[in-house]
Image 1 (tube, rainbow, N blue to C red):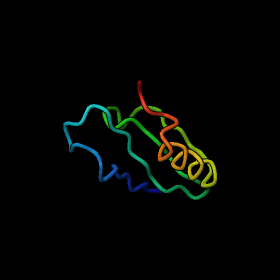
Image 2 (image 1 turned 120 degrees about the horizontal axis):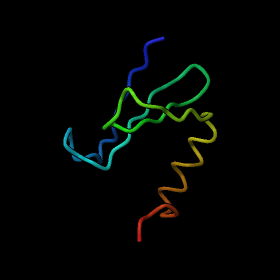
Image 3 (image 1 turned 180 degrees about the vertical axis):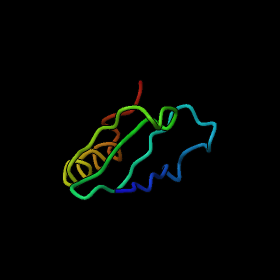
Length: 64
């Protein structure tokens, strides 16, 4: 299965050091570090990813 990885439109571009990429999987969403595309990835369900995005939008994961 080929995964089409994409960065957020909020990313600063190819030199952004604080970026993750997401890719659609058969049973969820893959999340990986854009600086290490060959490294490990986190696979989560679509529901868990939706909850994560909602919490990010609410500011729950903002850095102090």
